[in-house]
Length: 68
Image 1 (cartoon, rainbow, N blue to C red):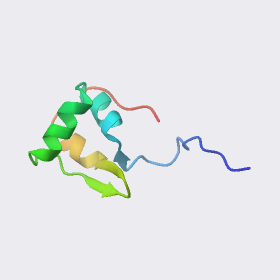
Image 2 (cartoon, rainbow, N blue to C red):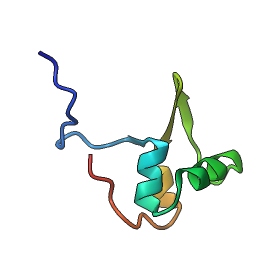
Image 3 (cartoon, rainbow, N blue to C red):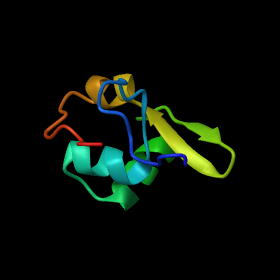
Image 4 (cartoon, one colour):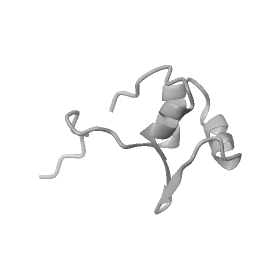
């Protein structure tokens, strides 16, 4: 049986838009807007948008740490 629970010992490399919004304390719409304006770099992996953790740190304020 395969587990879908994230392994807390593996470092998180990318945030989803929802996770990034939570970490920054802003809305997902603002995260998408920041990506569109080039304020946050993101990658599209399949149909999903992923934001590198380093981009959240560069944004200057990871207000909260996302718990995966």
